[in-house]
Image (cartoon, rainbow, N blue to C red):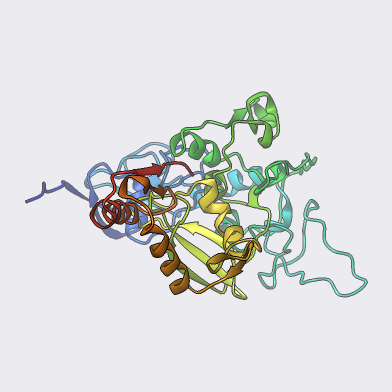
Length: 379
């Protein structure tokens, strides 16, 4: 029998919640389906407490603690939405939006008609709220956690003076862009680079209004030790880090990454018969949603590359021509029979799964009768 974990009971917005001992107030609320806005929290990362949006009221506790770092205790009574809590959240969010493009705000302006000038995302929008159409200049539009928080708090215009001096977008990386104008300094990209990949290619640099996510020496990403794995892109809650091309797939197909024998599971986003997006499978114990640069950005190009072989080629009269699999395998078997056992060697590939490599070495020893087996354990 497994160990029985201690359980605690608390009340959140009048709802009885039971969680494991050691859970935070935010985790308890999520388990109960109660939404608490947050931007710096990520279930894959250690609690950070930077955005200050998850403040709550807890009876018999002074001030407004943040839910992501406050441990839940037995008998605790939590209120997630009160006038004091909402006021603090709105102020925190408005301070953040004062240096952020305004296309995140709820707006009733639809796409401009011919001859009508497009709204600038760096101007203040003071239009009245009618519907929830937004400008679509942001690559994270409608998939942005900042938009979710704005909608939850109902912010439609800004009361604070704006400072939207633009900085150049870092487009040096071949797979994704880094737009610091949209960065909210939640540090999720920094923490992902440190806690998940252990690379530490980026960190928070400078202070105050000059604070920014930067590489060592504040160089471009391509000049840093960044491995282009894309974990920073996956964990960015806004559109600051985004792939070069962002398209929404029509459907997804679950598969195994073909690049090495680890067996990382992934979902391929398909549209018009082509792979346009790739994401890791978080429920898989092998990779837990994580992918390397080849798995995340290379599979789509590899599958549809014009030089990829899709059928066997056989040398006939000095030219390689297409052949069927039966023809190719018969020719391989015929040529194998010409050699002595000590003249035959088998080289396996790191692109195969561990199971496929096992079968190949078993075939080499049990069927071919040769011990000359090697393995290319390289990507």
